[in-house]
Length: 294
Image 1: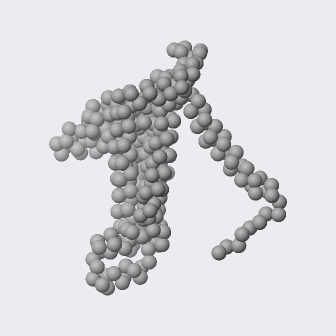
Image 2: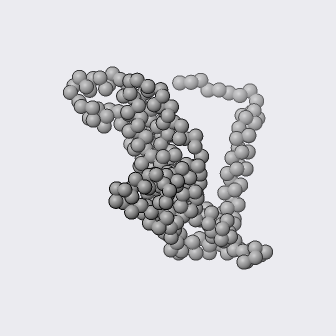
Image 3: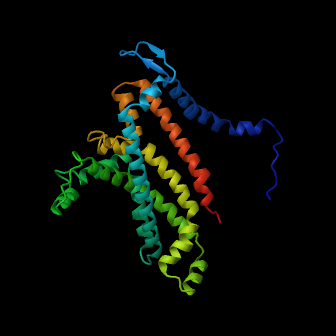
């Protein structure tokens, strides 16, 4: 048990945490409080007067079919992005651990995409799969697939998930590689001597020991899909076609900055914040119970 540290001056501990508290207060609590206050206001068409309407904006937003559609789009997009990004990263990390020659180069090349900005990643995938000039779109058409993300909502969602997952694979890959290196080799060798095959060794020994890493990445990827993919959505589809790829965070931008419906946009921001807090709490309350930290 580590010894308890006692500060000789009672004010010193508060001074040490004061900068962090100030940053949290200015950059989180104050904007969150402003969003909550704005969500209860309604402005006139010219933005000259505001009226306090309590929860009317929330009732209006939750009864809006377009907002309910954006919730469905966000659920599909977030689940698909997290599953693809984590699944591919785990597969690549396992393959990297098996590589005997050029392991360092292999890992370095897989980390590079994380340095690409989300909007740039979106533009790269947009050019690759552009139905007129995209090289991969041409390949799909030659295979008989009528690829057109500009008019087909399913194709647009596939393109969006691919771009968002590709951006996050490198980040997940780093953590999975670190997790795999911490797995005791003696356990794997003992299981191999007992006759366990490679697949059985992975699912019964390696994957359970990766549970803390997987749980951490599940939380990070969920937050990433909800908040950090705005640039990709804006660059790749702009929420279209026909709002089939309009996520919650992109609808907040559309209503607030494009349509200037500030009250509705603020209400949507508050709802989105509540959803993220609830999801994170559920993950820590129920999913973390199945995680063993050694």
